[in-house]
Length: 569
Image (spheres, rainbow, N blue to C red):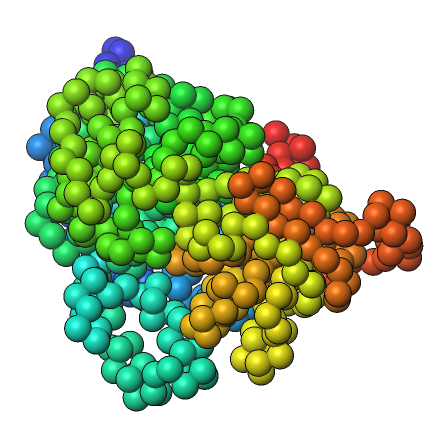
């Protein structure tokens, strides 16, 4: 007698049939029954619902509830959701100390952890829930790598606080308060009270930092449903989007639409376009390049600068502008942004709605206001991010030009060199930085840090003192999305790789010219060669996880990705 037919529960084309089908899978089915599944569940697709809940991270404390909404949508659409979690690190909590070495490295760990769970358990599709800086890019990287039907559900932004009578107050301004206290502008008591009311709800910090830049980018790339980029974390709209995402992933599975059908080069270029139009974080350069790598798409720094020159900055959002993300949501959110910049978009790309960008945008309208400008009357004529090159950055550097005063778009100053963020912070707090200085912070790159820390504590001290019209900062590290001012990061090659920044000395003259996209130092090649003689890179202590990362990571010019040439793939 042929017993095999009695143990065929679902379409063998489904990945999860590897667990449910066949007489030899008795043990696997028993384990699934132990989780509460029944025989009817064995017949349905299995969908991974992978969140990043954390009691430590305000952008993630509500994700369990959103995951439940996702699961309801999956059940309604005929699937079986199975929940799991990955890690979440809060960049804001890591600012200004050694903990900041870990967030960027966690991006690849998140991607790897999703690969392990999904491949080991043969899920048919997945919905991924994240909120803060490196979690969403790690999740989109995993979607591109695994290439099974996927929808991303961002956690959404906080509402702004109300500090000093300003109902639009965001933590990006609070970060400057230590400098204001040290300068005698505000009192310590005022700062202590402001800390308690700046962040009134769960969600990603209310301004356009890296977290909300990535939430919004998810929607621009077509990996999140309309509205998912800006709906406040505490809103019922966010819950409805989560439930709809569960239904949407089942529709993608039925239609056979996978992430690499969505994450084409044209879609990645739309991502760059969206970043430029919104004035998003410079970290998006790293993340878009890493996503492109996983998707098998060629994306270069040149693409960012080319698009920056033709896409205006249209969103009046903090820290480069006036409003929090919730205000953009009230003005139509990312759908209205896409409608505004429609002439600059690649329109025939697929999205997780099952519609093309053209079909979606045709349903949208945009009503220009003080939050969302027009292309004809933008915040600034060029995109939010510029890429600079020169003998100080032969492989490029980036700056959030949307947050730079017009008077500082071109600046020449004397170098003051530091080998760590802490050294620079002490110099600023000690009032030893003179006007006309270019602060140089090196050995903070992907390898040298290791982990490419954000220099937010330094920039916040500078801005809090009102020195952003007198002092610039350049680094092989990176910057928080909360940063504004003449701050240039991602200098490549980094100091640990023997880049020119390793050989800059106090007093060297550095020229920053953002309009002409140059970053140079008045040091000849002959003098650089002399300074390189006998050089050994500074080695900073690191534990095992960071040591692995430093060994495998590439430069910022390629997205600080894991160097696959060092892996036996």
